[in-house]
Length: 229
Ligand SMILES: Nc1ncnc2c1ncn2[C@@H]1O[C@H](COP(=O)(O)OP(=O)(O)OP(=O)(O)O)[C@@H](O)[C@H]1O
Ligand SMILES: [Mg+2]
Image: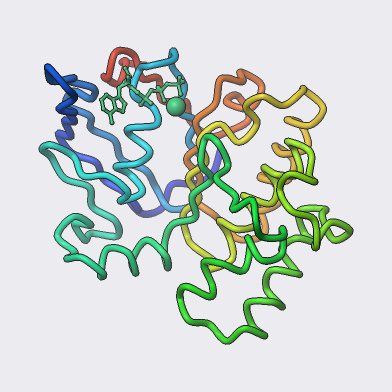
């Protein structure tokens, strides 16, 4: 188990409801969670339990209805407008449940995108994206568009894109979902390697027991609540 030295993320008393059409859907209830720097946490639980909702709040992509999320001691939802976007761009790599690669762009261009948005020089973005795609084993697929990549290759491209700004935190929502066990094993080995090389803090939603068991801690979400150990 990774030594938990310092708190990176603290989620306190988070509730989330959505107002949709005729009614209100209460999705998360009193979520409290502390994650240490360098820790690898698996989020597991049934479909509809609220895992993706929790990840979006953790990643600053959606606001809680109440409660707070502190990152290195700072409340992220106190950042106004563009500051939150910049914080996210610098600090959090996000691998979405459905990888959300841009279909018109090549793997290389997809991976470069966050760096270009952060206004890194194009040469720097290109160099980083090329290195990362090599690191995830896709050096031979740089010019392929997502539709010309396999599911596992698309996920690896999404992981490379999530890491281009060198974030201290990787959030991955089912990075091995819909993949066969060999390909999931490869994604797992890739994440292991990245964790070792960069001391990445990782929060990974997964339905795979074998993936969850290889991380430092398993957090179970059931009906929008964290189940006791
Ligand atoms: N924008 C929204 N408006 C209304 N309800 C929503 C919204 N987003 C999610 N929900 C509801 O919140 C609940 C939790 O959704 P969420 O996507 O977080 O589940 P999940 O645990 O990630 O499930 P899965 O394993 O299937 O991906 C679901 O019942 C869903 O219908
Ligand atoms: Mg989900």
